[in-house]
Length: 142
Image (cartoon, rainbow, N blue to C red):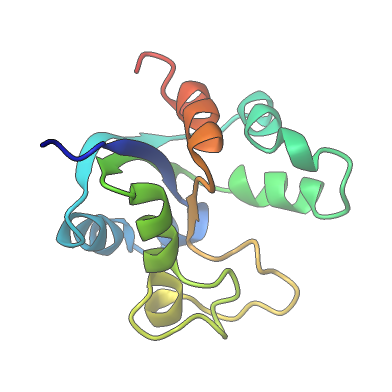
């Protein structure tokens, strides 16, 4: 019997790339047993981010988030495996690095930025629907 495989989009945000943490984050994804399907260093565009964060357009944190995501390269990753969406979100930890559990990406590697929880190293899709939509935005050829 084969285990159903799901895919997720993972982004190492500009703060993670700038701090040289992409390799460590990839190592943790692979150590968890997930397969890397696609990995590409990309420069986001306002148009791409508007699609990616469509549900947040008009919210007070939208423009600061877009500005941050445009501030440097992003490592875009498609990973697959059994329950990879749930598993990666657990591996990433709470969005606030100060309260993220030790052993998680944000708990071990994150820094506290007052009022800037958007600078929290990684993004992971939150559902199969979001993953399919986000993968199509960042990796249209997949």
